[in-house]
Image 1 (tube, rainbow, N blue to C red):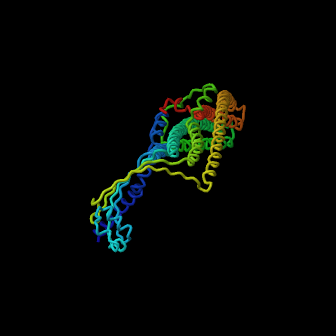
Image 2: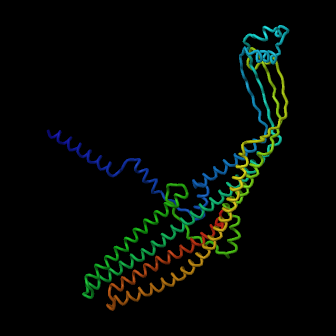
Image 3: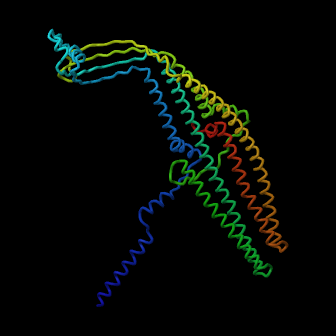
Length: 462
């Protein structure tokens, strides 16, 4: 009996141990998922941009699109090259014409084949026909224009890819600024937490020495909790900013920025306006406008004839596939001319002209929009620079004001409400400076992006 109780106790202990292990160690796939999403790497801003230019999914997708358009050039060129066909055909017939023709192609005609009864009522005859045919266009205006259109569209796709690279570089730079700004904001918020702790210490000290009220202690404690909540929010925003950067780099990892913000050069407005003329998307729009007028010429080419040459070599055999009882060749030149197609070409020509006019107007509007956004971005930089300078002065004023109020409160000359108000102003000034400095850097980056010089300004290979 004692032995049974002893074994039962051991069993209970083993079960408890297993339960604890399972509770403390979740399933393997859960741990792997958590580890994957908690991986963090550090990169410099330039490293992050270069990584994104290689791995970003949007860039890769557009690169595939550009390569596909390059293949389309080969498709268009193929219409100018010879076409070679091989065919093996079998037929069996009692049709008098075809029966005689098959025997003739097989080179099996004899004197008996001219017997009227055999000519009118031939026996069934089979024919294996092997042929190689070649056709070479000589003049096909539409194909030449189509090849030119395909080449320009391929160039337009390449220019769009360049612009996409600039867009992704700008997004990565902006995400890095968010991370740097979030870190600076955490520092500012932490200063607020430290100040709130000091205020609570002073309030407790005054209360314990019968120099202050217990309500001051409660209010100071509430202010400390508010400051800690701001810190929690700041930590979350930093984590999201890192995750955003990882998303742009096409990874599930969180990416931290290892260096400080890069100060992009700020140049005169005419330099940005001139540089914008070479933007990839503008060049692509110009090429497509040219293609729109090329399309008019392509439609008009439908009024012209199509000239070509061709030929074939043929083997015929009544018994064997690929046999060669008889052989013959054929050479030819041909002209095809669609003289009337029910006014289809007239309507297509009118449509192409309207689309060409549309492309011209869209290009003009696009250029004006780019010019406007550059001017707007330039003014944003000026505004952000002035606001950043004012924010620095405001922080100095808020720090001095908070220092004086804190001293007066410690000496019983001001209330806790005045101290907390001064502290709120100081926290706002700290956060404002971080926001203004980040806004200035982002404004310069936006101006660089709008002018198409961001890769050059970052010294990253374009």
